[in-house]
Length: 401
Image 1: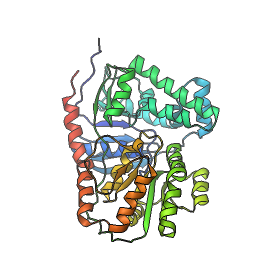
Image 2: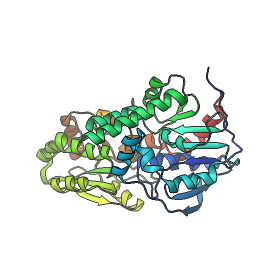
Image 3: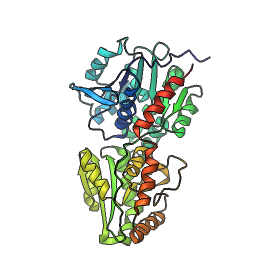
Image 4: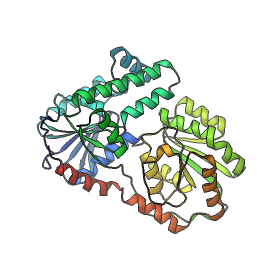
């Protein structure tokens, strides 16, 4: 029998535990945590997010106060060693530092917060209670079982593979023991199914990721304009590095052969690893590190297509919507598809390089019209964060034990 869970209290503020979250928002998980819950403050007294080194208070959908505290993530190798030694979870060992735990301890016992959100399942390690005594919602972000299996499969050494498998085992063990003790919020039905396969009785709902939609319609792109492909994301993340390696191996030679010197490729994101820098340098791709929001906007305004060349993916949904929010079509592998989509001008899901080249040639020969830009923006608009915040609040009120 499922235990009785506390229901959401719309008269109470929301406390969000997001140990991974850094400002400015660049990583998918950071964006998903801050942008889902900040706008919900329009409907509750306030939302307080404890990020990696910030306390951010939102009221009426806006940041009204942000303070910083001293905290640094554990180094990747140290976190991996701790996870293997303790048979723990890699992200627990990386993000749940002593400094962060102390910061959480000053707020988590406050009875004012009857609603608690844990960004990622492993953040529940910070809680002295579960969803039977307070309303606790786990925001999963991804299918962690698939995610860690992919990391294990694509690891370049035994230690990395074993760390991923240990983390996957920790997650499976948690779900089998505690999966019915919390509410869960998934980004896709596919993610939801991944958790249900391990714990069929877990109680959950699906709410898609969102995006900030440009208020301006981008200009028409004329035919025979230089082809500019853009990849965006956290440039220290293994999945993004592997995606660009997949592009290099499977797609880039075809583009070079077809477009030659009329091709530019920009890699834009935060904290590029040495391996990422080397990859871009070897292929003549321009890398733009730690850009501002305004600079990121300018890169999209110059782009012909965005690239989603993922050989495996569980967190590419934000990248897809981000591209559409600027009226920029995407070239994507099937792995990055979130499911059935309406026809979107010049956008493609395919693992066949010939199909990517065909889409690019069509734009080269015909350009992108203003009406086609509008169609891309219109699809993105239904996923704007303010729209999703209202849906989220209504969903939370409907949850019943």
